Image (cartoon, rainbow, N blue to C red):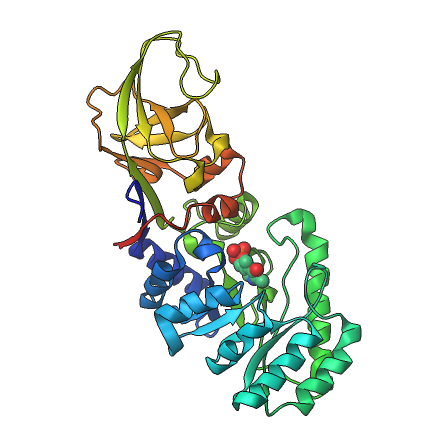
Length: 383
Ligand SMILES: *Cc1c(COP(=O)(O)O)cnc(C)c1O
């Protein structure tokens, strides 16, 4: 286990976010916590345990491997839904453990039915519809056959959900495309009902869709980024606070990333710091070396741009971020000591390094930045 840095997850911040989202979406809707990408870098095992403690009992993952990780922590206390990849070999385990999953091709449906029969269980399927994202999902022309299978194999298949995913609800530029998707999805829903097939639940919304297009909330909302206290885009945030006439962000970031000062060094005016010549000291300087680099998810594009908090003060990254280390300018802080705590993301005293600022400097999407944080950093739940 690495000890050069630690990720803390704030339970009270998470509870705040969940309370807010539940109130916004209403009690009757299922709130599915999306924990793909190692729970957006938060650490899937620790995160789902905390989320369960805060009242979440539905999780959506990308693949069977993530489903196993959630199941290992919470077993059958929660519903687990696989939205993306699974292989044929995973199906017996999935069906045996009542793991639910998206179906977007006929082969998966036929295999699921066959394996369910063999192990005397029912496979719980969510039929995904292609409504305009053009990634996964059934076309309308394929549905006749799917309807036939679902009816014929009703003793081995539970038609739990009908679902789709939107192509960029976080930007107004995609407004017409998403509106068209919503309308088309409802058409397909009605088409199935006309064919005497009614899913138990219908769902389509991710965070952005749930905020920008309330009609997408339906029976269940698949919430990723917002539960972690971040907005899908600046646009969605502004639209929300304007519509509610509020000024403050109702969400709280739950992640804090800390490390320590590994060593201190004096650098003479005119000397270069780190590899190459990207930073030359223009005066005599003192630098602190932090044992974090791009191998841990601290982007190389933060070279000469990033900021790190030490003793409640913002310190500039100087020189290139290397694989395992980064140097920061601490010339103006007299009392910096080795092993002193530093904050890469989060608060220290009254200052904060927000994910937004981190993203701006490294030119990354908040989603991307978070999921790049190394899995091997220990995670700890705090209050
Ligand atoms: C990732 C994902 C979500 C959640 O998206 P956020 O923008 O993080 O809320 C919802 N549905 C599907 C199919 C996804 O892949």
